[in-house]
Structure formats: C-alpha cells, structure tokens
Image 1 (cartoon, rainbow, N blue to C red):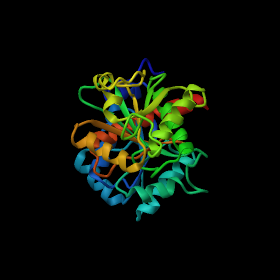
Image 2: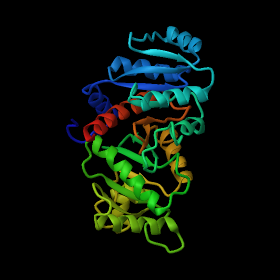
Image 3: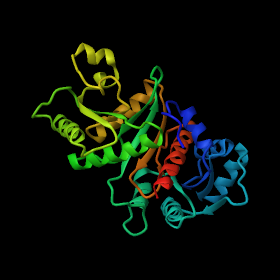
Length: 310
C-alpha cells in the first residue's frame, strides 16, 4: 500500500522495495546501460529478470559489471531484435513475467510487438507514454504525457490519456492529481485546437465525465508550474502553478519538453507506457541506467496497483 504521495524517486524506490518483487522481461538486453539497470534493480530487491537478446553479449557484459542471475532467472538467445521483442511480450502474455521493458531497440520495433493484434498487450484502451520527472526545486514528481506515442491526439484520445495517467498517479499515492492541459496560451482561442480541447477536458472533469483528478486549462507552461506566474496573470484555478501532470497538445511539444527537462533542468526521469495489459517500461536508448532503474521502480508500483484491481 502506498503511504501518502510519493514525491521523489527515492520514495518510489522505497515503495517498490516494500512490495513483492516482479519479473521483468527485457527485450534486447545486450547493452551495458540496460544491464546496469538490471543490476541496480536486483540490488534494491525490486525485480528479477528474463533477458532476451544476444546471449553471448549479455553474458560478456554481465561478467564485466558483476551481474549474476538467480536460478529462476534466464537468458533467452534471440538473434534479432524483433525476436527479442516478441519473446519478451509473449512472456508477459503467458504470465511468466509481470512487466515488459525496452532495451537497446528502436521504439518502433518494440511497440510493434506491444501492439500486435493477436500476440501483443492491447487492452482496448488508448496506449499513452508518460515521462515522470523529479525536477530540482520542485516538491513533487511531475508527469509529462504524451511525449512519445500519440502524434496529434484527438479530444477522445486525450480523455483516455487522462484516464491512464490518473491511474498511475493514484498508484503513486496522489489521490487527486492536478492536471494542467497545456497550450501556447492560457485563454481559449477558437483558432487554436489545443485550447479548445483543454476547455472541453476541464468541462468534462467538472461534470464528472473524467474523475479522480482536478483538470483545468488551457495553461501555458509557466502558469501551470509557477504560482507566481499564475498570480501575475490573474489565473484563479486550483491547478494553476500546482500541476502534477502536464498534458501536452501533441508529440512534438511533448518530446521537446521531455528533452528540455533532462538536458536543461537536469531532471531525474522514469518512463512508462500506460493503458496496456501490463506495465511497459519505455525509455530512450540514450537514457541512463539510473533512468531505467527509476522506470522499473515505477513499473513495480504500477504492477502492484493493477494486481490489487484484478
């Protein structure tokens, strides 16, 4: 059980450590950063692993970094990344693993296995990506969605993206997250679809069509995360300056914000795909082992929440 709102990745790790460990199937695990994250997760006792990829390379890197597998953990030799992805996804479908994780493989190849109609992890929901950040100077985790999957989501798709992130926030102990729907400006402009969608989502929230959160918008980024900026612009909203979630208008805005958080703000990051039948760890190939560890920890907490709801 989550005790209060988790505000840092150290708290997420501590929560994951208090839960039963899960099995993570890693697609294309033959990479040092990936295997260092595996090693770190094992040190924290939050997961055990099935590793799919080039077995000889996985064994070579594991020996170099001091990673040893338990008797119940396995390396599955898969010559191609496509076979690694499909094998890892199948392990989750068959109940041999609880979480599937992207290793050193292009996102498109990984998602192709996740989205396969017969052999994937579709749930009937819109799948969406979330990047969770611990930003220096902020007293909470900030979730950016969707910076990687949905290119230009429609209003109905944005509503499902909201439902996905609300579930994750609840799993992290944030019982009623503040969701700021972003645009270029903080007023409704009929010529800017993002502002119209923001107003519609806010109204859907007021009429209880979207529950479990406080949703408002449109917001420009400054008045979504800065109380001072919101006051200066005369914005009266419980979300203004206090956003837990930043719902971006499209993938371009989301991706730029994601990379800005990492490279300019030096934020810590974890990333997941939400809305599938099981937790999906999806980080950039350029992300550090630390980012991959935090993503695994988020997945462990999410998996526990999904199991409670079954």
